[in-house]
Amino acid sequence: MSTFSTLGIQKDYIKAIKELGFSTPSEIQEKTIPILLQSKTDFIGLAQTGTGKTAAFGLPVLHHIDTNSDHIQALILSPTRELVQQIKKQLFKFTKYNENQVFVEAVFGGEKIDRQMNNLKRTTHIVVATPGRLIDLIERGNVDISHVKTVILDEADEMLSMGFKQDLNRILKFTSKTDRKTWLFSATMPEEIKKIVKTYMDANAPRVEIDRSAMVNANIRHHFAKTTIKEKTHDIVSFLEKRQDQRGIIFCRTKAGAQNLASHLIEEGFSTAALEGDMQQKERDKVMRAFKKENLQYLVSTDVSARGIDVSGLEFVIHHQLPEQLEYYTHRSGRTARAGKTGVSIAFILPSELDKIHQLQKDLNIKFSEVTV
Figure 1 (spheres, helix red, strand yellow):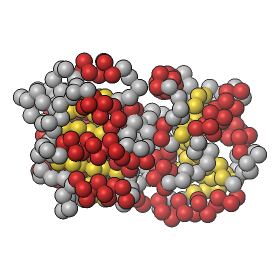
Figure 2 (cartoon, one colour):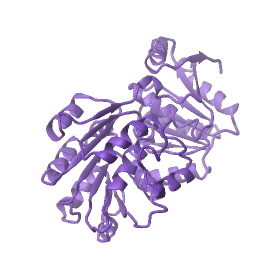
Figure 3 (cartoon, helix red, strand yellow):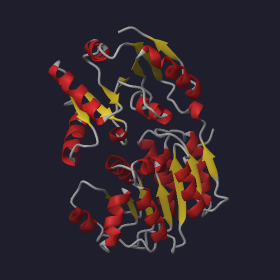
Figure 4 (tube, helix red, strand yellow):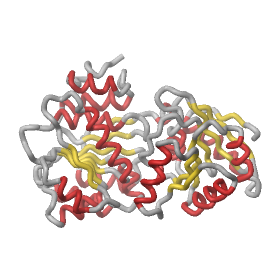
């Protein structure tokens, strides 16, 4: 079995990642890190959320930074504020024992742009950004990306589904004058991603794909409970009442659905709040702080809003409705059973949705058991 040392990671980083609980590389790390460390190349990594992608691209990009230079040498683009903050935090932790400090700045919407402009006046080697805010800063002349050597597109399919296609194209055009290498990480390869690969990347770029059937954490028990539209909320309440000492996330497909369910649960006396896309950023931050500090027991969230949520100690995930996309089931379920713990993922389904359960079992190589609430 590989170790981070045999993959070529320097001792300073190994000391830091051991403290973070990384003992052996995940599959995406094992296959990706040697390529990105040893070759100046474009790269495509296909893997779901929760597989260790941040370390897979983060450790190599840190190794490539010239700390004697004050220039921005790498851009990491990610779809949401929460993911941007999470990546920055992770990179900072990786560099804990470095002799020469690598400086990372995060820029994203929802925070005053003046503060980010001032932060970028300091020495910055890596910028982690949401595409829209980065374009804004480039147009204002507040960020110089003319020396960028590496552009990393994290959750590329998610960025496109959130409407960042035009911004991504502009950023890739801005940096194409430099000797830039593009590392693209995505859960899926829709046509729009293929266009980006064809337009901006080497046709012979190495590609690593993680088998979907190995994507779901083995420590998660998968259940489904049959219900009706009329009884579904009542059944979820019954499930929660039996788990008064546990914490979890309830996933809804729509913003309105998340708000309505959260309101109902609050009326029933549960400590909960909604997290959805129409909320002001201050309100989103307030809800996430409360949830992380355990002032809230449950979170009712839409799929996109849950991107970047990394909260340990969640015993269960509830699917108010099954997600439309396969990878969203993996992403949702992966909020529980973190750090080696076990967890439960339970879907409340209508009888007509049983075929979807069978499809998930087949596609993700997992076993569902039926339960009654």
